[in-house]
Image (cartoon, rainbow over all chains, first blue to last red; front, side):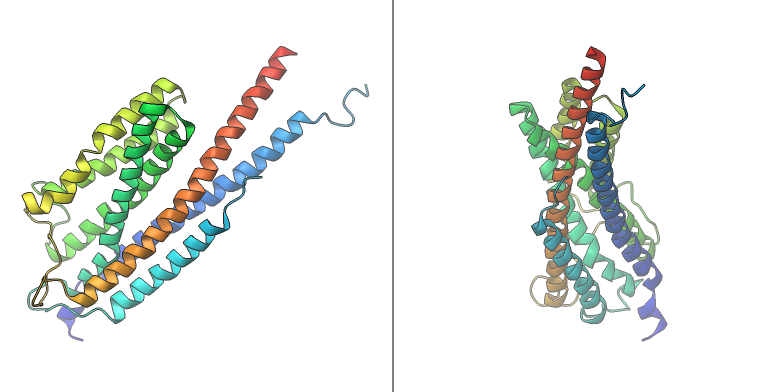
Length: 57
Length: 238
């Protein structure tokens, strides 16, 4: 493969990394929202349930 | 606990596999272009992801439009969730297109952007519109009036989609209409077209998987918001 055939190879790699990276970042953002929801559900449930020691004093 | 449907995970797995196959086929199987006619022959392979990203972004903008229309006509939470997921995904795929395109332009044209080209600029406007909607949703209080404003932007902004789609036919300045290499019929080599189709199917599968998950998450977040509001009201009433 000659030098002219390789022209633009760095651009190709950078573009692929950005495109695939953006999909990965979006997927991770969905995953972090999923975790937040799981935690929020737990904390909402906790807020609704009185602590066993509440009212001892 | 919010449940992510197994079919969404399966679609993401299939789409990811297809994406890997697209890259492999695009690099190993798709033919080289004539180095004497192209300034950066290797960079042309960017189209195997750039074009499917662009097509998929139109699906996302279509979803945004459909959601905006639904919000105006019926004011349902389901329509609003389409606006939410459509704008997120429109931004995701739009950014992919307006970054990979200029990277190819830099290699092939020597300049990343052409302010006189219709398609480049209408597509950039579409992505800016998705960015505006995402930012407005996150920065403004979630009232019906805010949703009305955002849906109006989504509705009228959609006019840019057909303009962008036919831009290279009506007014071709610099952006290629189709990728042209030596072939008798259409000008598009069948192997190149095949890899682009594999790319489009793969990214569409990812798009559908992401949409299902995003919809579930927005639905669960809205439910939590309602629960927290109810808790606040209970606390306030005690």
